[in-house]
Image (cartoon, rainbow, N blue to C red; front, top):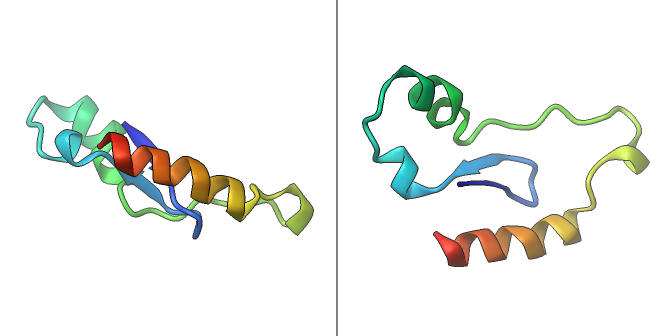
Length: 63
C-alpha cells in the first residue's frame, strides 16, 4: 500500500490512489502520495538509501 522511495518520498500504490472510499482513505493515505519524509537532523540516524531502494523496488513490483 505504501512505499518510501530512496529520495525519502512517500509513494502510495496506484490502486489505492484510484479508490473512492471516503475521507479516511483520501486524507489518511492518498494525500501523503509524493510527500517528503521529515528526516532526523543527524545523517547517521536517517534511513539508508540503498536499503530503501531495495524495499522500494519490491513495493513497485507488487503494485
